[in-house]
Image 1 (spheres, rainbow, N blue to C red):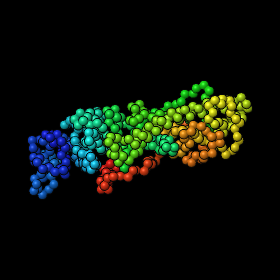
Image 2: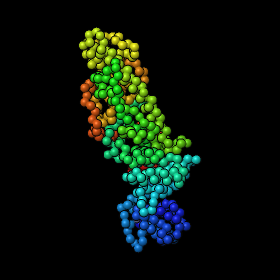
Image 3: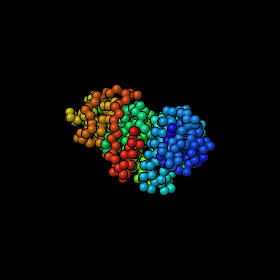
Image 4: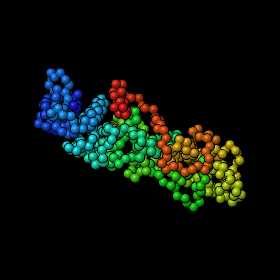
Length: 441
Ligand SMILES: [Zn+2]
């Protein structure tokens, strides 16, 4: 017994709770197909005076050949119907549930998709179950939605899989002058296939949507006149990253995730477009040039300081103590003043790294130096005696920290700490439905 079937004549999905008025009952010449086993099923309880609710059953009273899948299909359909109703409740939207890109006899296992219209824009919204089908099915789906429904955006709202999320720990970035922690994950081939086909992959986390960008790790080269070694409070300044956006490039090492309120995706004309996340990515992109520049400059300054002619031993010692980061005077080769021996300065943690310096996935809860430095951002020049006690700087770390583990121990999964969700415009009842429906149940 199932609540949904595919009407192969009208090529549409039937959800009995939407009503079955006008539909022929019984087998109807094989008009109805089971979504689990794709056998023909019969519509029962369809008469207006029936004492039971309508439902579909297999022929001869048999059970579905895939009972578990049938039960699952009903449950997933229910979620999709709720999604459709949520979409319909957004002012200016219409929504229907469609079967797209499926071949009879070879079901992908994906629940039907919601096709939403808003003005001239058509968006396909997927809410798959726990598992995505293979890349071929995913590609077929995206292509079919575009061809048959004129879909411009095809968005996939996935459930968070803790195993997938835990693999690379978190990624600390510098946003608006503050350290911000982003979740990361290693995409699987289905997720990459969606993006390669022009779709968009998001994760739902309560009322938040997590929007991915690409993280590409690289090492800064060492040029003449630069010293990249033994930076006080740095684990490995040569280790850095760059971003690919607005969707991750296929060759990204892994993905970072920007959290935004789900409701923000339905407020603009470009519906289901994560504009807020793209702004964040733009900021990360803008920040990286400054970060690279700062590090290189610092490497030059350190080189100059450590190779100053006078009392090299003393200079090196002072530099190692973290006291010799000179003010930003690019032309001051060799003109480094004697470092003040103020003992309270040793904590001077690379104060003006302009952007994030979480050089690693920062998987360990308290990596010695990098989540650290909470650098004061913008002005690339360093005050001679940096007074700013970086607020989020943890206690001084040993300058000789071990290299970051490549596959760090997954940290406890922290709740995202996104910007406070904006006030919502949806009625409370719908919000509740939405939360249940998208929030991971
Ligand atoms: Zn069946």
